[in-house]
Image (cartoon, rainbow, N blue to C red; front, side, top):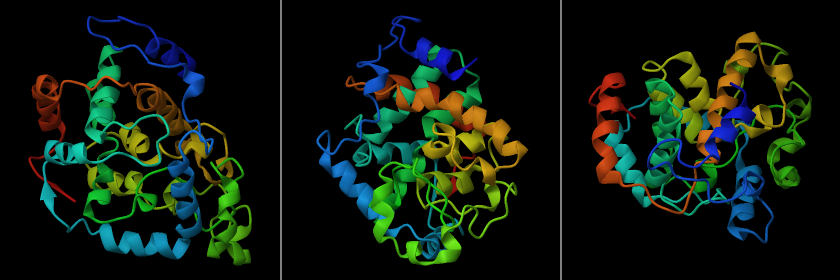
Length: 280
């Protein structure tokens, strides 16, 4: 099914009893005009000025040993009830609300269980923001570092003060990478996507791994940038990222989900794929 067909299904009311309609036109999502929510642009200013190759490499050393804590997935989701994503112009709901809205939208469309689970947990890496990381280092659109920034990244003008802009090696089309070697060889800006991918990569199918790792890489899966860095697997799997995107983006609504009512179903789904405790 094409992305447009998925978007059409997402906008239909009452596919099942209790189906929640989208609250606004799809064209109104991802409105990054400063006047719409000034704090969003300020977050991206900090993000674009500070996400350097050296910063990303340091965060990988800091977190990818996965030795910070052990916790179950539902426990982490419950903690995210305390977090609102400052980069998101479309919602001020907590992250557990967004997680359940995404998952319920996928369930209404009869997606396979692993897909529904991925919709539920795709933002769980935002737990980093509750561990002291600034939101500009956790949320927002992601992009490669160590090569030229695409003008298809949101607010591309805000890269002007990024120190990597002064390094000629990092400002060519491929930068430090080889054309066509694949996204697994590319350092992406640090955030919840990359972190969660490493937490869960041994527990989910490849399609879900890509959906988690690259769902914020809008410059690629929505705008078509950086294809020269991809290999054939990336191009095939990016179709799954596009298929997932409507459930992430268009499921946001003002009405909060009933967490207590939904919890038994999703706890059962979690236990089918993940151990009781994961390394974070």
